Length: 334
Image (cartoon, rainbow, N blue to C red; front, top):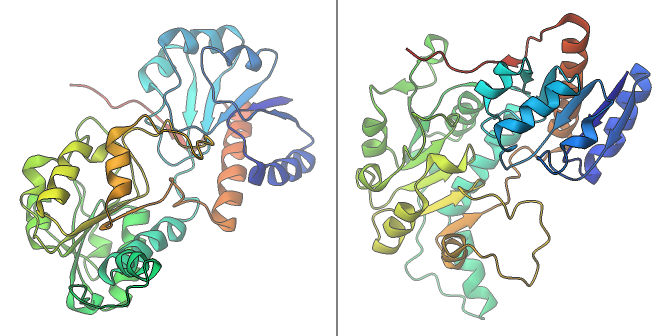
């Protein structure tokens, strides 16, 4: 059996080698993403595994994979919006993800971002860099005095709620499918709008679907408190970036922390000293009330090992049984 892996980074290689040795399977890797230009690399392999922040490409790519005898696409991510599930199914390609590699990895970053925003760490660092040690205008609040709104209460959202609760915060939440097992942890609200109006910190943990794209927009941002903070470590397109910038510039909200962006073409590129060619991202970088990290919520030793091994286990599972417990399917349209 031979597998081919796309988008492989240096920190994954030792884990890949150990898994390949343990299963007596040959694995070839490339740092390139899967695209119409690189799909030919999958020819003569039994299965493929990807990790990328950008879409795979046009319908032709899926047909090409099928023609090579490929029967699956395993993504080393929880999200799978870079894959056209309809085209994958049309070409008999089973798509798998890694839904629970380490909820704590992502949830801990949400808490870290929240505490840095609330304690004005970025603003104090900028002042001190200019030999300015004043406190003026940067009084903080304690998390235990705040209400945290969790949007999306799956594994990661529930873990974030637990961590915030441990700091003494009041936890409210919204999910299309509320979890009764979390009723002692999260006070559910009937709508996203209710959460936005009440919360001092809003943390997004929902997948990206057509129904959630730009769920945070000019209208919904206006519902938030002027003193509130917005955190997104889920999917960049949950937020209308232009609307967020307008809200930050006008003082509609106090600040934001983003680990994901609408345009992630800059991720995994070495652009040091070069122009981003992304005016919106450049505006966000220039704002001292905004914290940005390059989609690293998952980037812990535990999570990386679980991601790589989980994705490769799914490839093997599909090739051996024809399906996988981690299979994702396109939504059923009415």
